[in-house]
Image (tube, rainbow, N blue to C red; front, side, top):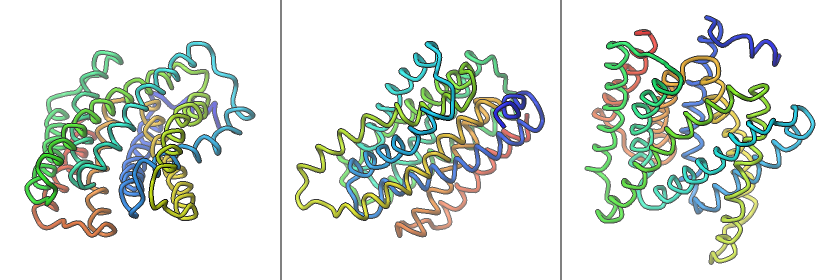
Length: 301
């Protein structure tokens, strides 16, 4: 299977598989975010539990099923650990300051344009005028959705603006990790070497933070629900982060990033259906604009 996957970049089959990976990743990422923000469990505890499960589940694959990474791959993994730490840190800080459907669109709306520009320079990817219209529709729709959420949220203004500023910074880290991870997975011996060790090494930081956070919480949340949700979140994360990395390996990094940001549509639906946050006709219209932007980018190429 590894040889087949490695034969797909640059082919029509690879491009189709990249689209599927990016869209599945989009849904799973929105679901992942709702698990961290929702269910009434502290986001710090939840993120650490996700990571602990990811490290435990990925370690056997890393040790026994894939080759040992080369020195250059380890350097890429080390860089990924740093970038993803700051992504997770800013994402968690944003979640504790503002509602999920307000923060999430800011994070996702800021990253596609930055990623596409970075991919143009780093990977020599080119995008035509039609695709740039699609990128503008998608990012504009995402940011307009966030603006609408800001106008209707009841969170205190100072706390809200703090959360939004952190969310914007988080979006920059999303663009950074998308580009860096794409470079790393393309330069590893096989994509699965990078993926297996990524899930182990990038998951070692937040369990420590989560442990000390849990020690000082009062009252402490019961461990049973935390561990069960953490396991579910880890499984979702494998598909979410692994899916977008495979998409950037198989086809254009920028297009994968744009398609992945349709997660905002899924986030709005999850927020409405499960977190009981209002959607309404204006949000629905913006969700359609976001989806239309992604379609234009893909078909325009």
